[in-house]
Image (cartoon, rainbow over all chains, first blue to last red):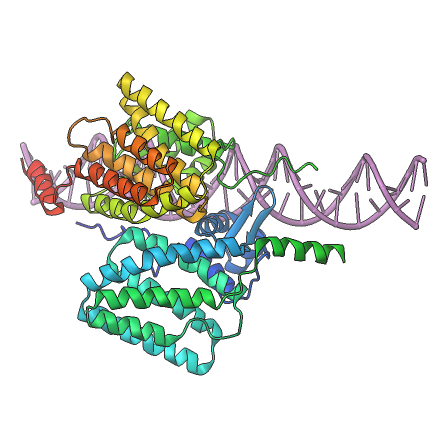
Length: 235
Length: 235
DNA sequence: CGGGCGAAGATTGTATAAAGTTTCGCCTGT
DNA sequence: ACAGGCGAAACTTTATACAATCTTCGCCCG
């Protein structure tokens, strides 16, 4: 039975070229090398990755569906600029879904997974010590995705991937102080609760963790935003 | 101000050709004219809609992301065949999200929306009287989407659209009796609760409604499924 | 007569070229 | 000097052509 060629729809180490472009652009956006509003020309990206526009276009469409890129008809693709309202929606959705995800994760916990989580915490601590903000943001997102993978719930995993990508962009945009993302301590606490199979504690910690992240953002009123824009344009 | 050409990213009456293909194929799948496992050839679809393969591919990729089509590398696109495990995941997600959605819907209720809901209920009753199963399934899904639109929460709306599409496919696959989808009475009850701004009742009714839909499905054990398949092949 | 190898056909993946749209600069007219 | 419009350049969109891969059918060998 040579069913070897078949590969998972969302393989993490996806070796095909579209995935490489998608992940490269995602990394560039999330590491703040491409600011919101930046135009993503197809030729430009294609040249960077040595691919034709066909593949670039596919990747950009996927990113648009993830919500970190906006495609405007006949104008091109731009790095998304989430509004404060978007931000609130994203975090509300996370507060709804993630506590349930940790519940499931605890149900299907295993020594191998606990090892993986511990290893991840170590990586996060190291990045934080280095003061590497880019790696911190990336690893913080990966922690949440790891828990979702652990839960074995593919629908929740898919939703959360989207929410994490958007969150990372939002955090980079609206972070108040330059505090390095969300505290590693929170993640450690969640892992401890998972290790103890304490669902109630895990849910509670996840929830407060998410609340704290959102509380550290400066989500100004959309109306005020409009005014400020008018101010700039009028001046 | 010639900003007429600009259109919403997910316009319901999207007039562009990709959307027309996507909606046509979606309708065909949800109306059971294309059975799960059916191959969706690019040329075949392109000829039907008078479009080139480029557009067909775009549409199929979007459908794959929605989960009602599977794309296998170098083999093509097929109508998805959700497993019982998939079905349980989808309905669990709906039970988590939809009660919250009705909450929001009640927060932003308006006379215009109530009219719209009432009108929809009438359409559902009419289709049921006609015994038009296809229309019933479609309208039943649209009811849930309508409530999500009412909530004004774009993230939840996006997630629910995906869940509804998958649900429709699942219901058509695993329905036990040929009972016409989910009872219109449930929907009427939910609308009544929304009209009374009774969040608790609305949440409870939505939840029991979803439970009842799932209870009417015959979600056989995956293991048993394998066995039956082996049985057929062996015979 | 059954099984496996191989070539032809069909289908998808990728690249390139043609068509349509937007944008920006420049020029003209007032 | 400034407003308005014409036109070219750049880009996206769509179509078509080419390359790679898989499937299928027939043939040969055991």
